[in-house]
Image (cartoon, rainbow over all chains, first blue to last red; front, side):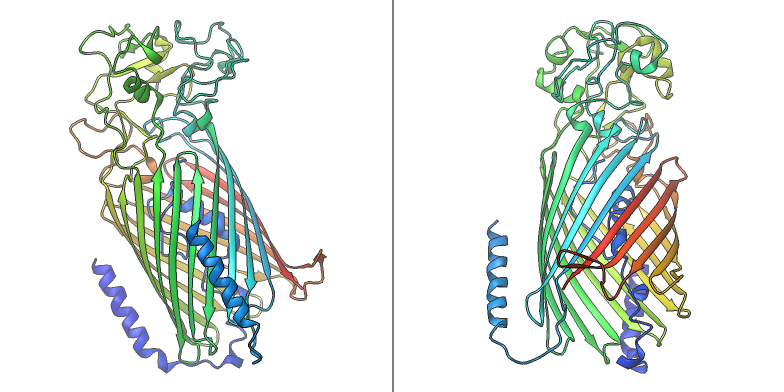
Length: 72
Length: 496
């Protein structure tokens, strides 16, 4: 739970400090490149599924974090 | 179905309302989009959980997913997401290892009952004629797949998702309902989300909540289920006429108080398995070329969290077998093709589990050709599993239309405190599993993908313009021996 505490502190700090940075819309051309998306690629859909089923850990990857059997 | 009908009614109302608005605003989604993804997955390994931590884990899965995203008006998008997945699994086939086709015995056997004895000869304990071909001589074994009904199955899932963006595009709300089904499991889920953007859309905070209400239609190892059905009488039902051997290859006396029996004949008592998850994510643009996100999930699971198909063998109880007695000493070897050990119990795990994963993504646009995508996750749960996941991907534009993206992912986890390998649990324990997915291991995954992009969607199929084609292959290896490969092919179409 110590890690959770540090994460919350980090989130609060970033929230507080975010006004230091404000990239204008017309300057976001590189950030809007599909390769810069802050989410898993859609082609990883089934790859993420098998990782959720085969590994003890799941969640925090934008995928499903509950439900389903994963029996096989 | 009531929930789905209600959702559709709301969407139709929203759509109707949108037609009366004359004010121009750029749509959140300009046109209907269709995403198609298909994948072929294969794995092999020697630690099948259904057969107590040893045995073939050979599995293949062919799956397809289609997502249709429809703009209802300027601000609202409705998505339908359906998946169908068909698998064959050596591990789950051995829910009933006594049901298989033997070339020498009875290839015309059409009995697909999960309790069927299939091609197995109950009297001899093995197939009748003896040759040098193990597939011809085979009997019940954890190392070969059986042909019973549990060998293959189809998993289907449907999700309806709706999202609404404010006119400023700084607030997004949405909800979803989902349902899935496979032969021993049903799942119904619903959830909601709220996203807020501020600081000139440089900062985003997302909140999500999901509930999955799942129900087992439990299936059990044949010998345990048959024992209960036969009122714990080894002289009737499935066991009638069947020879059982002990570890010393001697015929077991079925009327002895020391005869084989599972330690617990009370199986699944609570068919529910519910999951409640809350997610918080924070995304921040750091510069014109860099951005990061942090995310945290809290997942609480309640209900029957163990898998009733999975066998456990205890080290402090005598072992009993059905099949060819001369192969007993060779039981844990792959060369064992004709003897099977009767289970001591099914897997037992606590009825609650709290999972807390948190992680981060950091992406950097190095130049017009190259970008850097990174991901890290730490995971902890109250079953004792702690894990680290790290991945890196380097998308490289080789032309205006093509991008290649090699990737590497490393995963490591500690074992759940309820895990022990085959024959290493004690019958005095309250919880136990020999599922190697819950063991201590490291895994490496190497991937390579290529994307074709046509932003003008010049190639068309009917009214659908092809926007992207994506092809990716990944190879996954555990240090415990399991290896897997997955190839995925995706298409994105935009309706013109």
